[in-house]
Every structure is written in C-alpha cells, then in structure tokens.
Image (tube, rainbow, N blue to C red):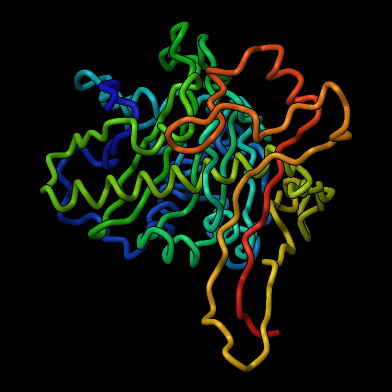
Length: 374
C-alpha cells in the first residue's frame, strides 16, 4: 500500500456547530438549491464564475445549479479552513480540482442511464496508466443518472467534479484573492471530488492518483484516510464508496479514450427578451451528453432452457489493424505476460512495442445483456 494521502474522505462542509434555527434539508439537491439561491444567484460575478453557461437540465437529472453550488461550497470551506487553521490535505486537493474545472468554464457532461450501466459492467484494463487517458476536457463535471447512482453505490449524490492536473501553478481568473496552489514536478495527478448525502447532511469525498501509476493500482494500491473520526463501520463503507466511484470514473475515461464519438456537445440557444421588460434572458445551452441513445447489446435465446437474465461483462482488448502476414507484424501472443496475465510492457523492447502499436488498436468489447426480452 502506498503511503501518499491521495484517496480519502475530505470533509463535511460544516465546521461550526449548526444553529438550532438552521433548516434541516431532506436531500442534497435541496441543500444545494439553498446554497445557490443565497450565495451564487444574487451576485453577478459569482454567477459568471461558477455558472458561466446556463445549461438546460435534462429530465431525470439533478439541476445544473447543484454544480455551481458545489464548487462554491468547496472553495468556501477551504477558505474558512485556511483562516481557522491548517487546511486538510483533501481540502487543498479538492480546491486544485475545483480551480481546474473553473479554468475550463465548468463543462457539464450528462451520462445516459443505459450507457452508465454499460460502463459499470466493463472491466478495467490493467496496462493503462492514468497518464495514458485522454480527457474530453482537463476540468469537467460528470452528471451521472441519480437512479443509477443509488443502485450502484447506495447513496444519493449529484455529480462528480473531475480534473487532470499536470505539474504547475493553479489559480483561475475571478479568484485572485484565493491562494495559488502548486502541483510539484513528479506529482502530476488526476482525480475527482463529489458530495454524498448521509444522515441529513452533505459529505465531500476527494480521490486523487498520480498520473505515472497504473489503473490496476488505482483502486487497491492507495491508502484511504478518514479525517472525521468516524466509527470503523462508517470508515469501511466510505472506503468502498470511493473505490466504486473511482472505478466508475476510470472505466468511463478508458471507454471515451477509444470511443470519443459517444460525446454529443450541446448547442447555444439565442437569448430572448423578457416579456414586458427591457432586459434579455441569459443565453441557454442544451446539455452535453455521453452515450445519448445508447442501447445495451442483447443476446436472446429461445424459451426452452433460457438462461437467467445477466450481463456478460465488457472489457478492453487489442484489435489487429494491418495484415498479419507483414514482416513488421507482432502478435499479442508473443509478448511477455505478468502475474495477472496481461502484457508486461516493462519487459517489451521499445522497438517491439512500436511495431505492435502500429498494427493494433485498443477496442472496447461492449457488455451484453443475456436473456433479455424485446
């Protein structure tokens, strides 16, 4: 296990005792709606920073206002922590990811529900490194279907804020009074943060990984650290939550590496004048989608001895792209394997690797629903 604190639960956005008169919110979206209405919406500068585009929320997903409220809440918490005492490592890491998302104008991508289920039913490849992943944007927000998330992790939460942070200094425009955050050389990282609802209050989780490490080590090779003094059972449940969310995000990025065509970009609708007023409404954008209209492949059998309904898991493989008879062709079967049965690239000579990559490409073999009905 690595000793670096890179995958841990960060904080609840409440350090001070809750006033007795404070409203108790039944859900995370209701909490974020209050944060947005009280702290973001009334201020044009904050709205321009945390919600640079007004996006129409698709049916069945949490409002995009939750995205703006979540960014504001994390940075506010980190600022209060810096004023009161030494901020937690997760507050610094979460702020770095927040900066990156703001730098890229808070792009939000909604994942189609059936596509989300296909992503979850895919195995992670062992020979990818985090640095091999090509991101749609280096700072972005993934809006997963709420119903799918409840089934997948057993908790309610809105979205995942994801960022790719190479070594360098970070401070987006509009936050000039905030501290500059520096990612040192050799510590380039990717990761995400998100809020989950527990016991009537929001909790924020932060996970981060060094880009030089392999995906296979990303789930089990990092320590989990709890800063809240929770009981052992709660810590174990939170650890499992972070591992499942990280696995889901990594699978999504791997698939988009091979199938970027799954992304559908939203378009801008022209602003309209408010009825009986001189003002104009802010422009409205349709939503970015990942896997829109996707349908899980199905394999059906006759009524006699039909198998129970299940999903054959998807996985990533190599596909030959050139003639097998070429002298430069290198078969995957001749490459050395490690203990897990995958290609041991550390043992492959650079020239052999180059020849292999010339005649192969990565392919996602999609999961298949077995025994489903029409």
